[in-house]
Amino acid sequence: MKKTVPVQPADSLLEINALHTYIPTSAGVVRAVDDVSLTLRRGEALGIVGESGSGKSVLARSVMGLLPPEAVRSGRIGFDGQDLLTAAPDRLHELWGARLAIVFQDPSRSLNPVVRVERQLTEGMRRHLGLGRSEARARAVQLLAEVGVPDPERRLSNYPGQMSGGMRQRVMIAVALSCEPELLIADEPTTALDVTIQRQILDLLDRLRRARGMALMLISHDLGVVSGRTEQLAVMYSGRVVEGGPTQAVFAHPQHRYTKALLSATPSLTAARHSRLRVIPGGLPSVYDPPEGCRFAARCAHADDACTDPEAGVLGAPTGGHDHSCHHPAPGLEVTPHGTVPAAQEEEGGSNNGR
Image (cartoon, rainbow, N blue to C red; front, side, top):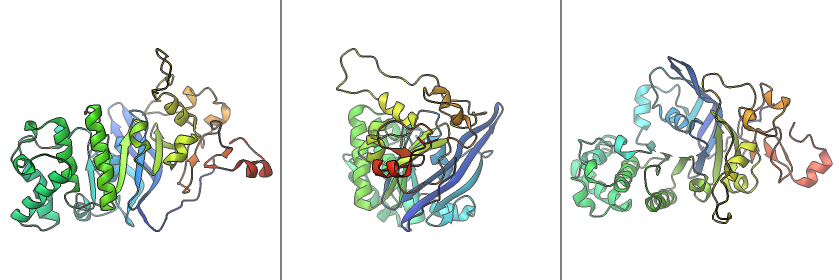
């Protein structure tokens, strides 16, 4: 399938081009991220969704460089015009925390349990912003208040274990925001929290992003998490992005059969009582030896021989519109691979049904 021409807007902050992240193990080489291309503009929110094991978290860690020593990355990760894959270690240390930050899904494993909150909040500010001890402490109190931690002055002396899971996650967000990063990666930031706290944390991230003009990469297996909080959406499956574009367009007119299946499997409040939940049959393909072509083909009722072509299933670089890599896209808009086409234009130009 022919790859599209990359579109890199002048205001793009993060440009990922043909990224591969392979991790050697005793069982074989894990192809965790396999030919992924994405663009994130300044101040924009990008949602990354997919099943567990689809490569979302490894993508985030690839951007931050938080991978096992044996991991191998290739391609390009451009941040504000600089390739993070070829940057010198000293330069990366200047970027981490100061301009690039990440919030992990489990704050109890991200915060040091034997170090007080004050130190964990202030050490980055003192290093990257050059603040003195009293200035950093005052800013730490302000940050805790901003993320909704009650009695922030007293909480500075707490150890993480003295706080609830929701409070620890708020502290983790405060740590990530302490040096005013231009890009915040939130990797499943509400997984371990109850529904009420999840909503509060997600609303907080959205509010802070808009107030600070910060770009946000929000990673989740829950489509509902990203539906109203991101402008752009990328759907990952087996290490690849299979569909991407404006969030509203992807939700309203999903084109890839995997995206359609994910949406169909989402529980609905309007469904009849005692009705069965829809599930996607089968499971993800092997991470060591994925099949040729579209990796969703084995689970797709619409797959045929064309879907096993070696070039099938590769999305290529984003075009700036609604893109997908499906040979037999879901009904709705008249489409061709990698983009939607108005019905009138489709009738004039003829249709190949995405094949």
